[in-house]
Image 1 (tube, rainbow, N blue to C red):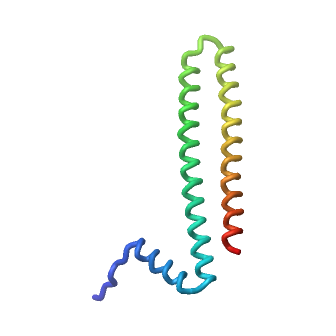
Image 2: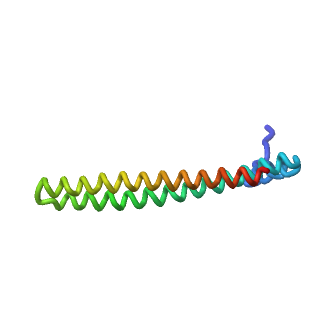
Image 3: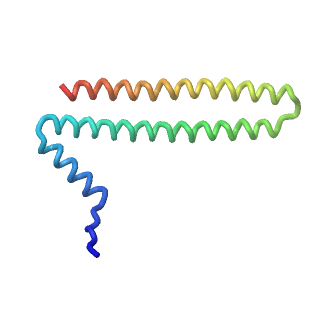
Length: 113
């Protein structure tokens, strides 16, 4: 039985990128777009991981505060603060992600010309 030699994903990517480079200006533009997309995806991923980590910390803090409540009034105040912070944090995160994507689109548009 014949077997095909295995190639790593890195060598496959390199071979694919070499083919794009040899394809001329169109291939180079496509390679540059792919490079930009990968960089933006990595930056978005990093941003989202930091956000989730921050929110989990705040959620844990709110849960600890709720466990220490002595009255329903205290619990209501903690819950209200948590909801306000959560909404504010998610809104800020969406603004950051949109700015990141907008910047990438604007930079990508300039590099393709």
